[in-house]
Picture (cartoon, rainbow, N blue to C red):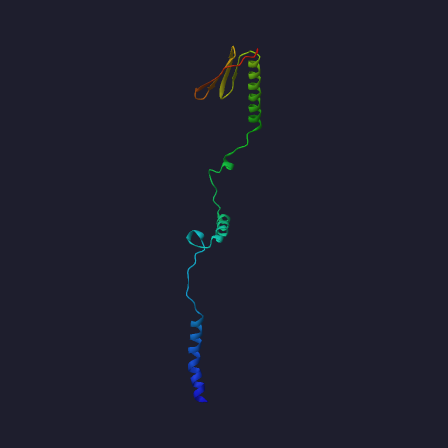
Length: 139
């Protein structure tokens, strides 16, 4: 009996070591990022985590660059639009006209059915001329 106890005491550590070896497997590296061969279903999860941690702000964000025009700017734009409409209506009646704003000088002339619109940029001095022929308000 003593020999069986001593044999079992000697075999017990060996069995424990052998059982652990039998359960062990090879370690295999599996990347998580789909860019490096990982599962493509991880892409959305990784992107969501990255965006939730991103606290940097884009300095060129178009939403940040837009400034709401003031009430005075809106009124000025509306008035200029109304004056241009009135000027074009007067040209349709055979009259010529001119409109001077902070940015442009608009001159409209109707010469026997040939409408000439001369637009001058006050800041740069550049001129644009638009000629429309075939207009005859009397027909």
